[in-house]
Amino acid sequence: MNGKLQAIRPAILALVLLTIGNRLGLGQSAPGVTDKMIVIGSCSALEGPSHALGTEQIKGAQAYFELINDEGGIAGRKLKLVAYDDSYDPAKTETCFKRLQSQNVLSWDFLWARRRQ
Image (cartoon, rainbow, N blue to C red; front, side, top):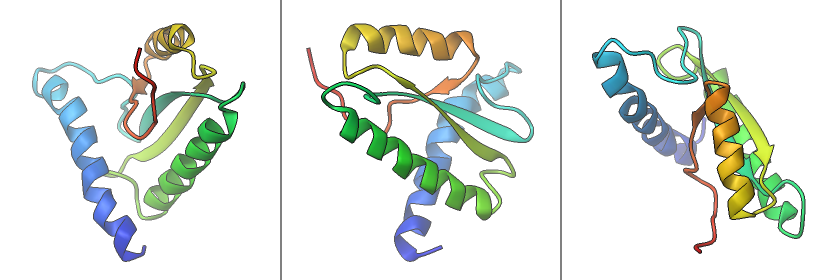
């Protein structure tokens, strides 16, 4: 793994641990986390006028997750990305995140651009 990716890996690990750490400490399970996998969901513009932005972000995230997985994952867990379209529409974004929650997926909007209302 090159130097830039090695520098980012601890940040991803820290985000995962901060997200799931409190729940695990309380004996609760974290959404999207099993002994072998961390499923991270994204709501992105995969269709509509901003689809180029969303599809490139998903491709980049998938490529990065593959690199992390090739190196053994995070704490032995492989990363899996689940991406749904929100067409860069705030109303669709809310529906998308509710969909991810209903599927027990850890949902982050950590790298994605969003417009403010």
